[in-house]
Image (cartoon, rainbow over the protein chains, first blue to last red):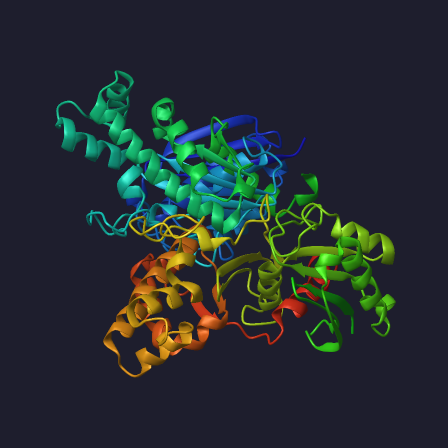
Length: 304
Length: 304
């Protein structure tokens, strides 16, 4: 069975794994990123971590997920807020020059989306749209098991979609951007405004209140459901995916908002689009398994 | 040079043409559709029209554009409001069985988008989003010179994207759907409400008043520009295209609304996405040339 190296490069930790074509993690190593010590230090660390993997040289290629938009053709980050120094740095070329193996880089959400499209909840479907609802909201478009990253690596930046222009300005995102109205951070912020800082530490506390039947919490969940539905309907009208694969920590509250969301969504799309399904993300380690699938997507397409 | 048969099947007329790989129309025939006489009549008509084309048997394949969403894998229309009887009819298979040539069907907007991506304003770019602003609003996603039609052929049904949920219900589309707020029909409706039925016959009359400096007309164009910008920004965050190719009759008024639209749009997208360009559609006959490019897209990909 073919194997691939997956690298999950985060602001805090780097993880490197050997993954087979069924998505099984055969070996994994983890170290702190230490980005403050410079890009060269981080790259050397990744190289030495890959060299710790048994039989790394027999893998088909290397895939890396990074936190931020990527120019996938050049293999460089376009914006690297959590990895200072990496903006414009030729990550793929540097790693590929060292190992003489095909090396690909994409952002962590795209990589997770591709993992889901190739091995998880969207397995084998021609058009998969992955959405993660967590602290923030991210998305990824995967067509024929290949990520469509877009010109600037910004495909899937659905956080900034305007779901209601009549809201308050929260931050640099658009007024009424879905991330400011329906992400984990937004649910926490709105929950605090209603119930106070002491009662709400995170979105889960709002969900718990809703589960207890608290009317204000139920109303907040209902509003979040509607806001998310507007976002999903916008995406659906742009690409009409075979499936929406939805992941992220906010899905821990799916029992209190997801059915409502889907019901609203179904009122916002054409009759002919009703067959599109929502599925929960399945992969336990989408970041690293998805990264490992990058070379499979780009080199081994006949393998799928 | 390779040649292809393009069929533009509309509710009123059918046009069949022989098109070369540079998009030149070498021969064209046109007849009334006569859809009231049944699907078999229309299909037989198309077959005999193709047989009128010199050297039709030497063409590489047949591509058809039809008015409505298509299941491109099955080659059938999903919805055929303007072609009663064609919903679910195996158009591609019937034509292909007769000629023993690869035959593909897609909706007319997707076909036009592919023409623009392959030969027109988006030529050679990896991700092209085509938008036509006419009586209605339609779109098409073209990735690597192939249309992404979606599960139900509804990719590109951007008309139904909600650009402001605080509007009035107009028709079966969503409240605040962009087509009801910024299409030619919408501009006409809003113009009539402001200036009266006698002054406004179509959107062009509103644009003329704006050109004369009429403040109410300028305000209406400004609102339309903003509404369109919200739609374009939603699309951009979903797919981050290399280019938006914009066509349709409303572009005759581009001098009074398009710069405003683009300026609003640029405030609604991330800094890293600013390189995306808007280009006006270039093909004179996108419907028929785009249709002819379907077999080229699906069969002759090495040819591109």
